[in-house]
Image (cartoon, rainbow, N blue to C red; front, side, top):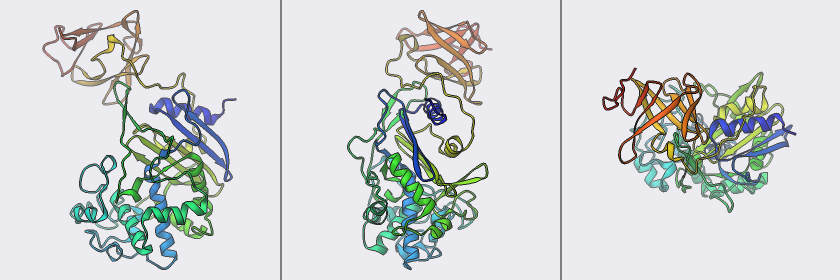
Length: 426
């Protein structure tokens, strides 16, 4: 029997153009449902995906453990714990809540897609000149801040950050499926071409000194275990009272506490985090009052709006299952070659997007698909919108390049009002 959860999952996969997606729901702390959508066959429940910034919640718990053990204060400047950082005056509390004013990303190449550097290199590159705000002035998400926090606990405990994660968090909670590197059988990360719908492999890099901000891989079952811990605590990890402290919003970070994001669902207040890395997205949220939780992982770089997950799975947001799942493009019909991409009708920018069975013409200002065309007998025939029933004609250069397109005197060109098009624009 198809459940509401199945409909939500099918909607997420089709709406987000997700190569694959796995989700699991807990009720009262106990697994209650799981599902997968995407390619045939769909991925097993135990498939590992990269969880990105959900990693930050583990780093935050290590920091609060150190606080409870008397090794640090939340008001300590990070420079006391990590000498040599250019942001030495930033407090532990400010870094945990993203209110310390640090820039979002470390200096250098895009850290999520590049081989990681060591801590001395990270510290040398980030000398404090990238600050975007004064401490406490505003909420500004900072991956760099969590790299500093991970290094702080590593120095306090005289052990590498990942070793601390395994010994102090994963082992007591029985989270054996959460790993630093991708395990055997892990999902492959993909990026989906916006216009063609084709897949490109994304790298699975070791992020080095940035690992405490987004390195880890996990499964939906391990994530549900972590979510229930965030609701209840564990005597060998962190107390319920400290977790309640972590869940409280820190001004001016409305909706973010000490390493935890908060999202309201009706009268409930769920906590957790989203995560993105090249090729992957994830979301984990739990209602501490009921221990109801949702964990979702997917292997697409974009397309999963994790902030919607609590209401979709734990709330009452209406959702209708799509008529068909989204499938990546493997072969582009000859009639479509050179057509997907950015076009103009007059001065209006449009996106021609191939979705495997039809061509959507989307207004890039509003995001609305104004027209749709389907291949019928070698012709692109309008199926929705003003051009329903009309034929989209594609004029090509001698080398086959799509020069312009025309439908019922409406001319689409690569540049606004292209004078090379023989039929005047609108």
